[in-house]
Length: 496
Image (cartoon, rainbow, N blue to C red):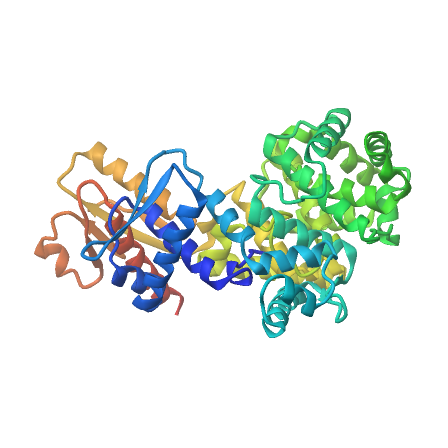
């Protein structure tokens, strides 16, 4: 789940897009240019820029300043290279009525549309429209809102994950959004659990765990508890790693002691989150338990690894253990949660999601479909999540473009051999997640699909078999845009 700012407020979504655009390049932007690139009217851009300038003034930033000029347009002056514009977005979000409504729904302090409207100087119609936006946003995850008090209704594991994604996407650990919870106390609890469980976590992972704990506290305060599920028993019963984790969390946070389902859920989240080299003790010991007991999850994971290696790509021996354990964590996620396509924190694997990669996506979809046919496991119904994360696993072994049609490029410049090779490497690195490009020598028998040259001589322009792009000796952003456009058009032709 990627949080759409339109859910919070359409106006701040536009302000944020403008700010990101201005931040990207150190220059003046005309209103017309911003309107064209953001697909908005000039009038709407002018209104958003005025609001953005006012909000930056209210934010009292000493790190950036917005300048406007009738003749030149808009310019964002960065006064500190270490500026974090994400803090400004948090400032914008926290001051919206929609966020206040969402927070009151999450904490179950919302009483009625009438009362919320009165307290926030809104009409009841507006409040009900906001409530509908929230209801529509959570519906894909099997959740809804109660008609009486707008409390979130649905499977508690789904609610927890949705809330974790919302709070992390909005605040990313930079600001503490849980007003009624002692942040310092939770930081201590997480540090103690990590140390005693022998987890070597990064500062960011530790912060993410603090958010896990905080969201659990918010929900339990409203009498929303996670119950132990029958399908979890074979993963936890007589599992020494889980029993140790449960003992540690109970010693450090005694309120969890009575809720085995809560500690099991926290244990699963820890396994899913920390699938890296630093947390080997917990992951390896848990995986060893599943292997020794031949759990269903272990068998499903083994089936996947076997099929991945036979149908997709061989797994080198030195990478096999880590690959297998990472896959296990992904299948555990697909077992616990339904209809989500991102990781625990709402982050998608963008190289797979954004890029075309038709052959790779066809193979990943076929892999998931065949695994479902062979196992009939509901895990393989989570296609959107699994295909992206299988691609992520593949990316640890090979480039994502490995199955795509090869595009032959010819680079002809008046530079030295070494300079030309450096340019080729720059182009290959830029497009490695999108296209399978290969440079051929000028005397190759193959016809190049695309010729790149800083001297567009007639010999190149008149080549009936190739497209030609004129580039600078030292590539500039415009060159990459032109190259990408041509690669995209050529790819469409090859796949049509």
